[in-house]
Amino acid sequence: MAPRQWIRELSEKDKVDDVYLVWQKNLLVARNGRPYLNIILGDKSGKLECRVWNMAEKLDSLFSPRDLIRATGQVIRYQDRLQLNAKDIKKADASGVDLSIFIPSSERSMEKMQSELDSIIESLEDPHLKDITKHFLKRSSLSKRFHEASAAKSIHHAWSGGLMEHTLSVCGLMEVIWRHFETLFPGFLNRDLMITGALLHDVGKTWELEKMTFDYTDEGRLLGHLVMMCEAVAEYIRTKPDFPKHLSLHLKHIILSHHGELEHGSPKRPQTAEAWAVHYGDILDARMSWLHQELEDVEEGEWTRYQRQYDRFFWKPPKKNPGVQDSGTEEDGLEQMQAEKQNRDESQKGDEPQEQRETVENEKDENEKDEKQQGLFRE
Ligand SMILES: [Fe+2]
Ligand SMILES: [Fe+2]
Picture (cartoon, rainbow, N blue to C red):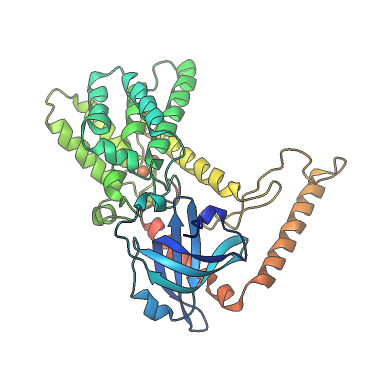
C-alpha cells in the first residue's frame, strides 16, 4: 500500500492520489460562465483547497461535506498557497476507515489541559460559580464533547481540542487582567465572574458546531452558541433556588455579550467591567491565535496574503537583519518593503491561470458569507 499523502507534506508539482475528508464544497461559476467545484479537503495534518474544472456540475451531486473522497491531480501554487488541481474525484467508502486520521486535533495533551482546567475551577472562591462550572465542564456528559470540540468553524482554533485551548487561554488572560487592575483599583473587578465567564463563554459551541467537520448545526445557525449557553445556564440555575440572582444575571450577561457588538452576534453589548474584560480577552486570544497560525506559512520579512476580514496585510518582522540597510532611514525601509510587495504581487498575478483570476472575488464572498453571518469575524 502506498504511504499516505499527508496534506502538510505535499509540495508544489506533487502528484496526488489519496483519500481526504471534504470540509466544504461549493459549485461556483467563473466569469467566463464555466462552472467549477471549489472544495476544502482535509486530513489530520491540515487543509488544502482543491479545484475541479472537469464535469464540475456532475461531480457536485455525487458527494457532500463530511464525505470522504479520493482525489487525483497535481499540487500547484496559487496566490502563494498550495492548491490541488484535481483531474478526478470519487466518493470513497468510509466503512471500516479510521476517521481520526481525517480530523485535525490539538497538539497539546488533553490530560494536561484538563488538569489545568481543574485547577482553574478549584481556584474559584464563590461556591455557586464553582458549582456551575463543575456542572458544565466536569459532571455532565458535555465534558467529553467539550474535549473534542473546535473553537470555530475555520477562523481560530479550528481543530478538535481547540475549544479547550481557547478556553484556557482566555482564562489566562483574565487572570493577568484581573491582577493588573487589582493593583490599580483594588476590588474593582470580580475575579470569579471573569474566570467563570471565560470558562463558560463558548461552551455552547459544543452544540453549535458538528463534531466531524465543525460545520454549523441547525441550532447553531438559528440560535448561536451565546443564546444556547445562556439558556443552558438559566436551566441549570432554575434547579438551584439559592443561586444568587445578581450572579445569575451577571453570568448570563457575560455569555450573551462576549462577541461585543450586535453585528458580531451578541444580542447585548458588554455593560459591566467583567463582561468587557471577557470580551476583550476572547477577541485577543482569537485574533492572536489566528495570526500566529497565518504567519506560520510566511517567511520572515514577508507579508501575508490580503486578509479581507481585517482589510489589511500582516507583516512577519525579521528577527534580525531585516534586509534594510542599518544606515537607512525608516522611510527607506518602508519604501523597500512596498517595492518588494509590489514586485511580488505582480509576479504572482502573472502566474495565475486566467480562469482562476476571474473567480477570486466571487469565491471569497462565498467562503466568508457564512462566517460573517455567525459574527465570528471579530471573535
Ligand atoms: Fe463566542
Ligand atoms: Fe471565545
